[in-house]
Image (cartoon, rainbow, N blue to C red):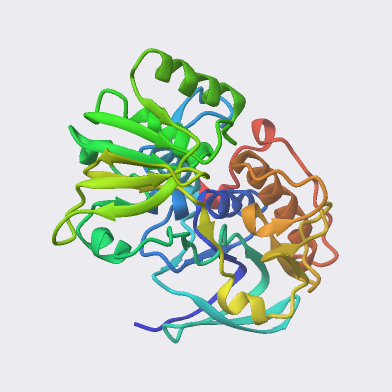
Length: 340
């Protein structure tokens, strides 16, 4: 059902940073609305790795990605921001104080400011260039995300890649998978130094095998059912690993989709912003989280949370022109009365 909605701030993206932006807007008495192409909130945390532990959220020594989204949902509940899920924003017109957004579902949103918290945009995995890979994907033998560790119970798992995802899941699947082989084209991994060290220690204890320096060469099996992964090194030497599952972690391809045609200044599929306000080259349009780019930017959820607060404060004078914002700490101000 199409809708026509009015709000102060339209937040495009309902991942962790978008959800926290709704909270920061609510604390400043700014009405917000969340729009996301996915059918449930949480972005990549929900869609790709809900059970993956996250270690750099303040006050949480470790929290699952799905658990983080649950907590953020509870945090914004007092403000009850409306949501348009399963909708992709396609059109933008107007100016600061009077924007109109249109979705692929025919919805129209009037907003005074816009926050782009689109993460990686329309994301998808970078697939290995292997013959018949689609057949093995369809049968579940080749996967790019881990949603449930139990799906890999007693499976022979080959993990390809050298970044954080490859290392994190190699460690997380110990004691679940029947065997774990980590394939990388070089001996040095790009993951965080501490987890890379843990990987080496786990290999030393025989909990998993490091297969380096090798790259994926071919997949073997009948009817799309994976039976083995063939590898090759730079000299052409081959090795075959028995496997029920291949987890290929070669990053995500990023596509801003219709947002790329909105005329916002961008660099390498990221939207450039003023770090003092998180405002884009178009007044009234802000970008936060992974989609935003500026000198010194760190792609951390933590930094995205900070950007959400910065953007909300910069939006306040657009929604309430001429009204001074008397900033108070939440410990003294509490929640706005309208949210209690």
